[in-house]
Image (cartoon, rainbow, N blue to C red; front, side, top):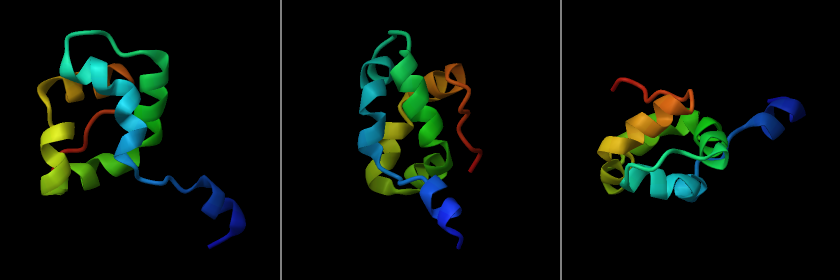
Amino acid sequence: MKLREVSMAVMCNTLQLSACANAITSSNLSTPICCCKMKDQRSCLYQYLKDPNLNRLVNFPNARKVANASGSSFPAC
């Protein structure tokens, strides 16, 4: 792997989505920071959905709405 590819790699970390917690758990609109974090974690969403410990958090009814509003639609599993 080239050095540039390593620096571009995303570190999957659900704590990055904490900026979206209010929007996901309520009917509040997502914030620009939430959208940015959601886009950063987009490649991790499938992994989160498959993990039984994380599934219920990222599969919350509003999570998909927040992701779609941020331009980071959830993958179809």
